[in-house]
Image 1 (spheres, each protein chain N blue to C red):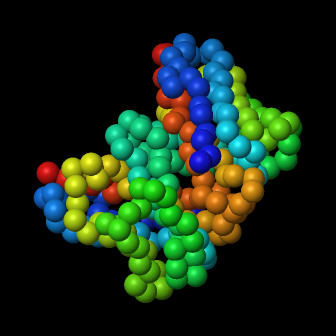
Image 2: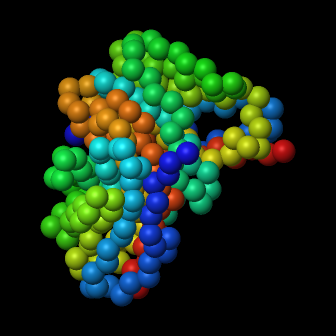
Length: 114
Length: 112
């Protein structure tokens, strides 16, 4: 069964540094998402992406965050200047159709800010 | 903004007992999805409910969507140790094609 793949599985970064999290969505999916899950807490929506532009974003997704689809397969999340509170598991997800199809999640990237 | 509340936060059961988690939205939902997250894993889609009053079953799991499309429940009959994990509901506002709002989840532990 096709999967969403994320790399790296664990990223350790010094506070203030930039970090890029990478995702390869399922190939025939059109909508892509980033979520954040702080340890032991709920899954929080960050941003959705369709047709090479942001479709929706949450209050968490401030100017420090950006997303990009640099080629036909990758979907990246960049955090420009990381803060301690950015430490979390970041999940990428994709779906065929935005409004009424299930979202398929990757295994996540655990981001640790020191 | 839209809020999705889920109770209980934790549930400890003896293997063989039943389990129910409840989800309530502050607004009418266009649909609701349920996900299961095993410890250390990622959310895995279980089911989607769309119609008012809809009931769906997956083996020992029964999912319901309220008549007003503002609440939902997941019931597991005769829990097994493989049911361990956190169950999240996720709703989308009925008035838009907005993003999924996840509940805080119910963490289920099953004692053998």
